Image (cartoon, rainbow, N blue to C red; front, side):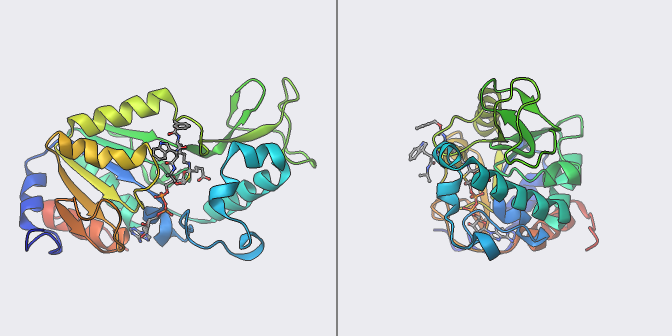
Length: 260
Ligand code: BJW
């Protein structure tokens, strides 16, 4: 490890960003932590404290107890409804506005990047690898819906075929949608800088993206207060909360002040 590797915002990174590199960002649950949304592996609270999220986020759990799994997502949807994007999300929108080629790949299903305004500039792209909690799909026909009938019975049923509706998210053992997977791979293979922000870097295929980028000579930056399997390999490590260090980064590189 180089002596400067753990320095807060190395000058080399600031200079590189000023050259308008092709930039990819991978985010995970940590970027939404400062919005009050619990991370995936954090202990759950209240009624859900006794359940393991890794077991609930599976097709097997839904098959065994669809009501339980639906209610878990309903609870999480309500948490996300009450949350707002934080300065980390807003800093990524500011980066997208400055950089000509900027791809944001998120593992989050909470829609907070979209609500912040990401993926809406001409050179920007927002890729949701694991789906979105605001969509459902019919287990029989895979019909995806943004709105679904409110029913007393949970989960609600597909208005077309009567099949059960499930959240349109990617559970363990399921494939990431091909289009999202291809877009993420293309971003990792072609970028010159990749930021890995707020992810434990353990869930595949997302966890491989920073390594693919590095094999293709990208400069890889990790933003996470805790070490992950990527930490020893990253070219720069910013071990601070995303909502603190990302606004500082856009201030140093482009002089943009984000108000808290
Ligand atoms: C902060 C912070 C702050 C806190 N600022 N940071 C190869 C090898 C081994 C296993 C596999 C493999 N390929 C596939 C697998 C199986 C499996 C897998 O990876 N398992 C691992 C656990 C080992 N992968 C799959 O099944 C994937 N499918 C697939 O590959 O299909 C092909 C295939 C099928 C069958 C067999 C083989 C291949 C699908 C994975 C889908 C993951 N889905 C979930 C649920 C989505 C819906 C939901 O949310 O309910 O996605 S699981 C969960 O993990 C969720 C997350 O998006 C994902 C990643 O979690 P994330 O975001 O990293 O969150 P945390 O909580 O883990 O970490 C938060 C981090 O933030 C921490 O590090 C904190 O320190 C940090 N932090 N505050 C910055 N303020």
